[in-house]
Amino acid sequence: MSRFIIRRLLLLIPVIFGVVTLVFFLIHVIPGDPVDIMLGENASSADKETLRKQLYLNEPLGLQYLHFLNRLIHGDLGRSIHSNRPVLPTILNRYPNTLELALFSMVIALAISMPLGIFSALKQHSPVDSGSMFFALLGVSLPNFWLGPLLILLFSLQLNLFPVSGKEGMLDFVLPGITLGLGMAAILTRMIRSSLLEVKNREYIMCARAKGIKETQVVITHTLRNALIPVVTVLGLQFGGLLAGSIITETIFSWPGIGRLTVQAINARDYPLVQGCVLCISLTYVFINLGTDLLYAFIDPRIKYQK
Image (cartoon, rainbow, N blue to C red):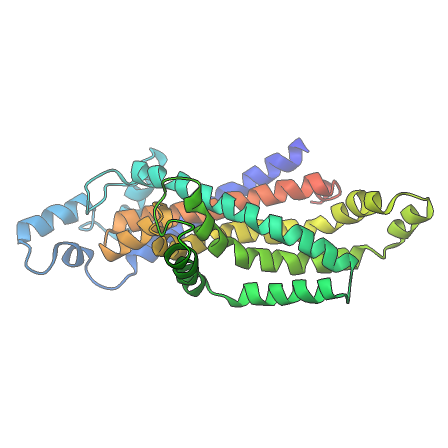
């Protein structure tokens, strides 16, 4: 297991280097002079020149990239043009809020999808199966930018059950959590159902039943564990999607997370902050994929011996 983990960690180095390089050059190929955009056309030449020196924009792109890597190694993502605060502490201050919302959304998604997917597979072609498939189709079809305002109108403004926006207490998690988690629950329900249907008629499952093992134990110990591998894949990818999807949801609910910070940075043309936010979200994807790989090896020990 330790060799498997070391191999995955070593593969992480070129992936992170690729992500950092891609983020840097994508920000710099955006058309237009960032200094003119940030300071406006009426700014003085001295102010523009000072900002260009501050951002190393007078130097060739290769040197700018080396400056960026050097600062990044020392944990420096530059300063926000808008607030003049260091970018890294600003992101780290917002990141836990996004992570909390993503985890809460995942709990909602699992709480809905696990029982629905399992009962749907065990009761195939029954009304429960049809109802869960209808829910899955509905959940996938509802976009966050439509569902979020609808929940606010119904549960906040009409019924006055939950706050409209902000993050003050646990009730504030409910509506953005449902907005983010419903789509994920729909995808997981379909995935759990199809995985269980594929596994439940395998020979080793029939053998377990022939031995007289209780049906509950057959489902939990033998069927569910072997059906989890494709579900874990989707779960890892969807958790990364929760962080990316939080950009829309955090904006709708004024949630003080990194998604809303990214939108604010884009509106203010704050390029160092945009670069830092995109880099943070990208690296989160990378580490989630690493965690998914390690979880594979735990669920299916055969994987860790594959080269």
